[in-house]
Amino acid sequence: MSFLNKNISETMKNLFQVIALFTLSIILSGFSGNSYNHLSFVSGNVNNSELNNFINEQKAPSFTLTDINNKKVSLSDFKGKVIILDFWATWCPPCRESIPDLIELQDKYKNKLVVIGISLDRETKPNVKEFVKDKGINYKILYATPEVVQAYGNINAIPTSFIINGKGFIVERYIGLTPKQTYIDRIDNLIK
Image 1 (cartoon, rainbow, N blue to C red):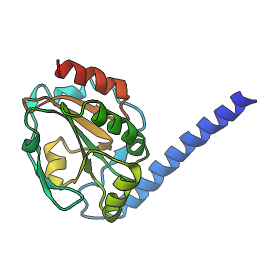
Image 2 (tube, rainbow, N blue to C red):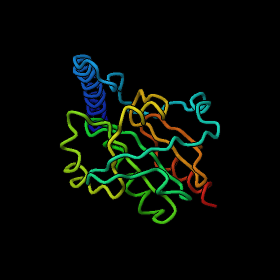
Image 3 (cartoon, helix red, strand yellow):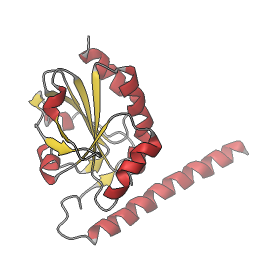
């Protein structure tokens, strides 16, 4: 009987994701002139081998963005550190699921890693600060601009994360919910 309940639960979860994605696409299609209309969320990790051609030791595009406390933050503020740059939104279920892992990574690598969440929230932007507080997010949250989205390859799905090495080069890109161990393996390799 527990097997049946597990299958029903998994089916309901999948059905919810399909309905949420469908609803999101309908909602987003109603907003004209919006540079984020093309976004979708990805609940699993995508095969990144062909995507990493975008990277190939590319210098991370610089930026200065506003954080949730209305302060300016630049990528160059974190020179010399490994950075996880995570494009996300509060309304994205896989993004929400990844938050505890990012919190743990920031705790684990305190002085060697900086996690930066770049929020793609627009209509829900007023809720981001409270969301961050409620979730206990311990890393920087910045608000995206269309220029940053374009500079990082026109983010088409979220979560999308980049790992930037201490020299400021993009060394990895992940699309979709990325297992914490994948991050750990890459970060450990970079901080040796």
